Length: 422
Ligand SMILES: Cc1cc2nc3c(=O)[nH]c(=O)nc-3n(C[C@H](O)[C@H](O)[C@H](O)COP(=O)(O)OP(=O)(O)OC[C@H]3O[C@@H](n4cnc5c(N)ncnc54)[C@H](O)[C@@H]3O)c2cc1C
Image (cartoon, rainbow, N blue to C red):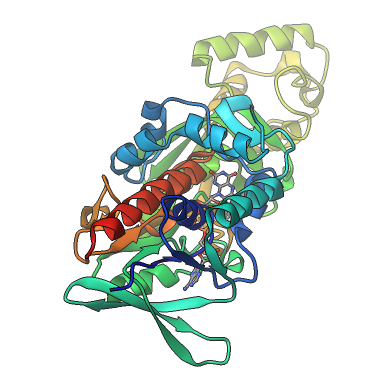
């Protein structure tokens, strides 16, 4: 019986899994279909790679709207501190930024990929690039190997005592994650939760957000509504773009938007630009500004309250004459401004889809995976790691930590499984 382990997919989860298993003395082949390892890591965090977050384990679980509890055992075994120490050993020192986001001090995602490559090499992993695995070979409910598609179009069987599937999700397919793992999972008898784009920018119907493209708003609240039901709310930073809206809180809300759009619901966003103030407080604030600028026209009286590019848009939406002198503005007109400042609505028409999604929600059903080992509950010797599983977190370094933590656990468990196998 072969004691070799095959790892399918050389992203964050796969490289960590392969290195971990190999460092326990296991013979490991890492199959990656692209011509390099870690393509997605290289573009992550806008090329700076937000490796993890500095928060505690509870915040990690809370920041996974997709099956956070399933990840507890993996996070416990290999947490953010362990990950930062791991990278420090390979020469990548890290720093903490706003919101606990952890980046390499060098701001270079390529340094992270290089460190992982070094880990795989030093542990003795045999890396096979341009090697696409098509399916897992199973006999008597036990893994016996994989079938590889060769570039010539031919197929080759490679025997294996255990397999780790770490093929990623289906988002940003140019990086190699094209959803192959879902087909592999279904053929192995696993059930899938429908893969959908998550952490994805949204398109809106109205034209005014597009006029504001490039404008980032900080410390705002945005809520997502399906019809007249509030589904979620986030506080933080958002961005206007040429197609609609993006930025951290919009990406977080997109997970809910995608599901409601799928269900055919009418989705809208409500932007509160002054969430710290009650309506009466904001009105008083506006009255103070109007007293200060009482002889000015409205278009010149809002500079203390709003970003410059937002002023003409807001005045237009309020239907008040922009040239009207401030001391002539009526209470009801002022209240229209107050309302717009705290409840500016946008109609969501869709998202930018898988091509632009940071992660995929859905994937291999966690009910069929043992969280203590990452082994399949259906097939012996079959392990899962990373985004191919039905797990998805918000932005902030959580998704990469989940890939590394589940990869670590799968690698360790697969090595143990092979040691005990006769
Ligand atoms: C633009 C962008 C920026 C991001 N930034 C961050 C960030 O800063 N912080 C963060 O935490 N998360 C970020 N993410 C999310 C994070 O990168 C992913 O969640 C994480 O990389 C998933 O790791 P993985 O190993 O599970 O999958 P992947 O990194 O997708 O790796 C899967 C690998 O499997 C290979 N593969 C697929 N099918 C086969 C097959 N049949 N045979 C062989 N090989 C195969 C693929 O080529 C790929 O290399 C970002 C994502 C994107 C798209």
